[in-house]
Length: 336
Image (cartoon, rainbow, N blue to C red; front, side):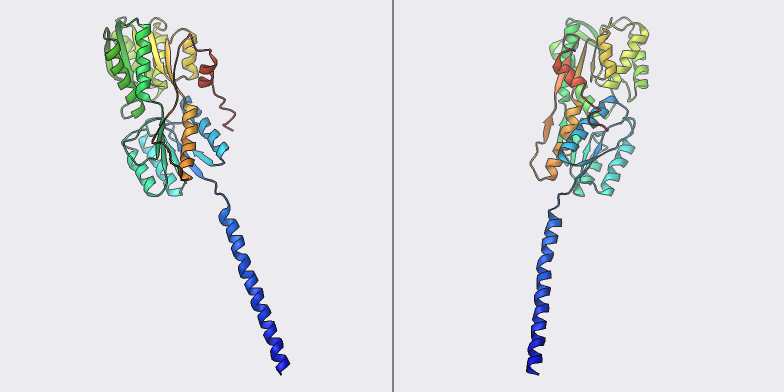
């Protein structure tokens, strides 16, 4: 009996040791799983998807995503006047639980609450292109739009010889980026070119090229031959004005300065119909927007305001390597 008790005790201890060995091995598997690097899911929401400017922003965002190994989802309204749709897109991404949002807000007030809701749900937001009246966002990556408007005024004042009459065709109410460009233009014209009279500064092009063409035609018909210069603060307003000038036969005779550098506007400059284009860097904007969002997710400190490049394109510098790199990035390389 004593022998049997000894054998039973030995078997029992073997079982305890075996169980202990299994218990010790389990944390190793858990540690491996916990150490696996998560692929961040980042929503990138433009003002619209139809404008070539946003395709370039998309390419820059895609480059950053591939370099950093994160996944981006590119979704936005087709036209740049659908505030409700953009707010719905933000809310959908909040509901699905993305890790971060990169947003170009259509309206600096209307989108503020959406951003604040996202941040309250622990989803950091990086704003690009156009400012927001909120402090909830982690960073603002954009052109210095006030300076961009000043550059437009300097170029128009230069080509007009510092005298004459000019028109400002605004873009759309509530767009912070173009509001700042328009303000910079008006302030610089007043300060530096007092002999240029601005005969119209309160008309808006609207968000489509069609509405911009119509608004431009109305202005050209109203002022006839009694002005010498025009400034438009974004791609769609500038393109609409270019078409209206061509249709009216005034292209090349009116000193015209626009903003952004789409292919249509660059072609207009090559044809001698545009005297200057203030160009921002949408590729860099998308790239830095995603990189900044990832930095925030990684717990890094980021700047509250990150400026991107500005340049004035003229017929004289159009073909230089620096300007060509800015206006013709390799989109196909990044957009599969």
